[in-house]
Image (cartoon, rainbow, N blue to C red; front, side):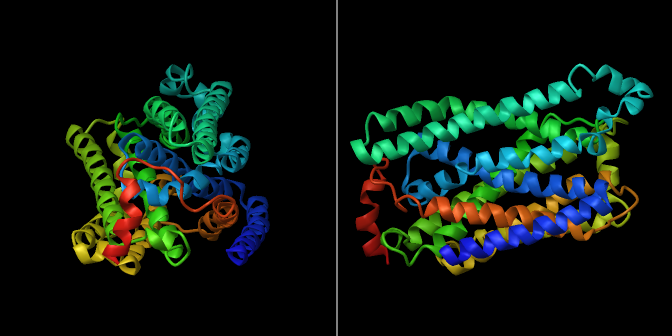
Length: 385
């Protein structure tokens, strides 16, 4: 684990140097690539926060075995808050509404200026991170307290904050998705876009949780609970999030395409014509059809090695989808992949993985207490193996 932590930090450091060089040579390209990288890794972090709150509310052995992983990921929110700063520096490059000359010549942007303006954008981002950091801090604090003092009252407090926290997470992330992604093309709007982003975050976080659980499956005490049944549960949940993301994505496409409104349809026209069409087809096949077919198989979900391959494939396609959302604003004339589009996600990923390993090894890999169904996991695991 410590070797992985060191190697990941080296990768992040080397990537940071390359990104600085890229920012110097091509600032616009750097900011678009950096936005892609930031949103992807923030999605895993916030998706883990959402899954953690769902686990506290719903219970179940599936959450018991990955709870420490989810908590470790949420403790990286301070890192993501710091990594948000470069986006503030690149606002005028990324967002047309942040450029006064563009706003002055556009009546629609003038009408949206009450919401889309630089001071309010920064203020909203501060509110989002403050809310997410507070939720993560309390959930992690009470989880450790629960290990020391018993299931209650810490468990009751975690369930209470999770109930309101989920509502707060959905609200803030919906607004954040409008601010950071939808407003790249400020004339376009979709009321379901936030739900697509949130569904993708849950999908990403669950894929990472499956990969980490498989990596720890031979470590005590995780080896006592990492039974095929637990991977089967997580595989079913992965399938559910995949269907949720696909449902929201197709609903948005169907409604906008059928409506054929001039303010909405150009967003899709940019992404399904020219060479971008190949990326659209790739998403349909490899982000939905292939993993959906594989996750229907009981064997796929019970064999950890196979499930990990599906999870890795989904993570790769999550990056492709974010690229498909962001990059056409930079090059609407056709598909263009810059080396920064690859280096930026790897760079942030290096820092993220390094700190994640540090966090997950700083606490016991399993909580002492869980929901009523989790108490039987240890005994069940021996039989199911």
